[in-house]
Amino acid sequence: MSYLETTANFYRDVAETPETGLCCVQNNPQQLPGLNIPSVMQEMNYGCGTTVQPTELVGSPTVLYIGVGGGLEALQFAYFSRKPEAIIAVEPVAEMREAAQRNLALAAESNDWFDPNYVKIVEGDAFALPVADNSVDIIAQNCLFNIFEPSDLRKALQEAHRVLKPGGRLSMSDPIATRPIPEHLQKDERLRAMCLSGALPYEEYVQHLIDAGFGTVEVRARRPYRLLEAKTYNLDSDLLLESLDTVSSKVPVPADGACVFTGKTAIYRGCQESFDDGDGHILQPGVPASVCDKTAKKLATNFPEDILVTDSTWHYFGGGCC
Image (cartoon, rainbow, N blue to C red; front, side, top):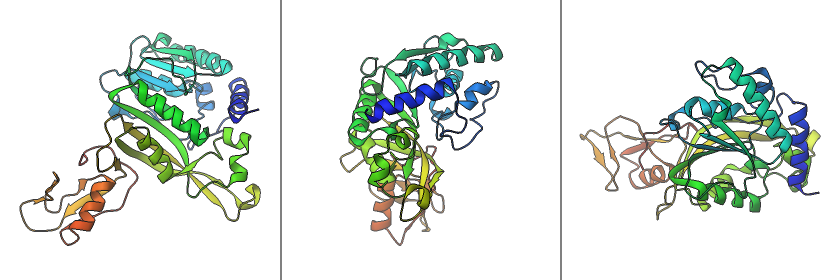
């Protein structure tokens, strides 16, 4: 049996018997005014963070959600796109599709604004998305892609890039590892299905996004997720997993490398009216300006006396240099 079959069987079980807290970092999902979330949806909150980024959701975008789970984030996306089939939820496990459909019907009973037709649930998987090239505004996946082995992750990211419109965004939440996961845990298919042993280190995870053609990667949140305790998991020392929320844009990768925003800022500490680095970045005295990690490194290297570059906050919400 392959790890993908093990994963499908695992999620058949939790579709029929919800396992509260299976993956999620926090028990309470993101709250939105006028949105009532059925308790069964909260019990089936099998994500590790959130992919629902309100700043990305103006104008009723078309959203492709990969791995519908209990339907919670599909409902949250529908809150911003209130039109028939604005949310396309792709799910390979029949039992999970059925559970999500039931949950969305329950949500309609407690939310006057919501029509279950806003969400179209279809059979499919991340490796062959059942939509046309350049056809959706946003793709989202929560705590799914970390399950994939690297070759399958590349396929899934290439598929996401294919179906996004130019300038479209890929919103993801996945566990990452603070050091490489040992091989004996990577080979444990059930731990992989539980989002505990497939996590990549941060640098490798982001590089996969860049290699798939995403020219901008924004880190929206990074926080502790799970601790793999040394004795339980046969490790030399405890291994911390973190939850990483990112939004990646389908824009060309610049010749000098992708723009990765992790919350760094650059501050001009001189007394002139402004500072121009000659590369399109103009800074005002004493005022922090958001910069990508690439620009931050150039400024710190080329202008160490003029520019203070702050550390990554791992929270970025726009206003950057690129």
